[in-house]
Every structure is written in structure tokens, then in C-alpha cells.
Length: 245
Image (cartoon, rainbow, N blue to C red; front, top):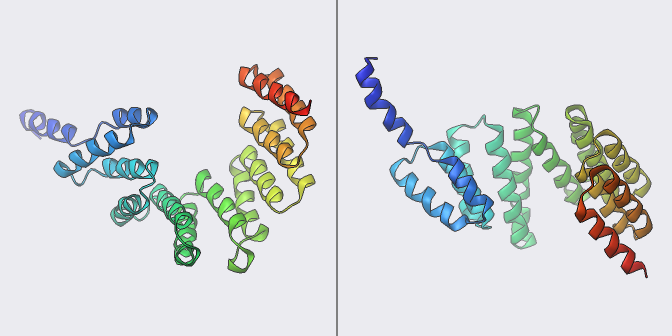
């Protein structure tokens, strides 16, 4: 391409791309309506900007505008049905829609939720979020609809192959949900040993509190503070110690 034509063409391409960093900054400031307005205006001029369509779906999702978010992500799947993340986001907003409607209406949506998450996992063997979504989905789905440990555990095993910490946390969640506290505690502790992040400690703390074991929760928080020196942990410790008095 002659250089003069390239220089004329390149600005058009540049202008057609949404400023994703600026939109993300608005998200971080929770200015979702402003982000939505900018994205809709941009898409009127550049309706085929896929990144802008995805960001608009995200903006809708942040505002709990489930129908609009569903429409945005569905259009992305229509554009590229082999994109795992599009299926994952579509399944996520469908799931949130199901939680916001009657149980009868939700029953008509759950099959599509499952299909979207499974498709995302199939398309991307390394998609951790899709597998986490399936673990949570199957543990919340009633057994007569196909939910339960036997459905969730294979995805927890896949998570463990990708990330031991995620796998251990997923199994902790599964067994906690299944009223198997000893197994749950064991896996949460394994996650701490393997990863030791604040998230890992927090999962075990919340587990102990759910089991009405504040003493263990305090000991876990103290261990977390010794490792991470996070002042918020001291606040949690003081609150729990005051509650015991």
C-alpha cells in the first residue's frame, strides 16, 4: 500500500477503536451510566467495534440491566461463536437474569446458562472463570435438575489441573455446600498452604464463621496478619474478640 494511502487509512482505524482504558477507568469509579452513554454514542458511528459492544455489555451488567447485557453478549456470540469469553459472559448475565425472575421463569433459563458455561469451558481448556462458574452453578442447582457434587467435582478437578489453589478452593466450596465440614476445612487449609493469599485465608475465615467457630476464625486471621501485615485483618480480629466478650 502506498505510504500516503496508509496514512490516510490508519487514522480511520484508530478513530474506530473505543478508548477501552478510559471506559475501564469509569468502571473503576462506578460511573456506569456515563460509560454506557459514551459507548452507545460510539457504537452509533462504529456499530462493528466488537470491543465496544463487549464493554457496553459489561456496563449494562454493572447496572443490573440483564436484558440489555444479554442482547449485547448474544450479538458477540453471533459475531464469533468460538470465543470462550463471550459465552462465559453470556452465561453469567443469563444466570443473574434467572435470579431476578420467578422460579417458573428461571427454569426456562437455566439450561441456557449451563450450555453457555459448558461451551466456554470446551472452547478454552484454560478458562478458569468458566469452570468456577460451573462449580457454583451445579452446587446451587437442585439435584433433580442435575446439580450436586457429582456434577460439580469434575470441574473442580479441572481447576486443580490448571491451578492447585483454585482447585482446592473449589473443592472447599463444594464440600462446604454439601455439609461436609471436615473435607471443606481440609481443602481450604490446602489452598492456604499452596497459595497463602489473602483470598485463601478469607475463605477459611468465612467458613469458620459459618460453622460458628469464632475462635478458629480469630486464629486464622492472626496467621493471615502474620503473613500479610494487612491492617484490615487487625480490625476483623478486634471485632470478633469484642463479640466474644
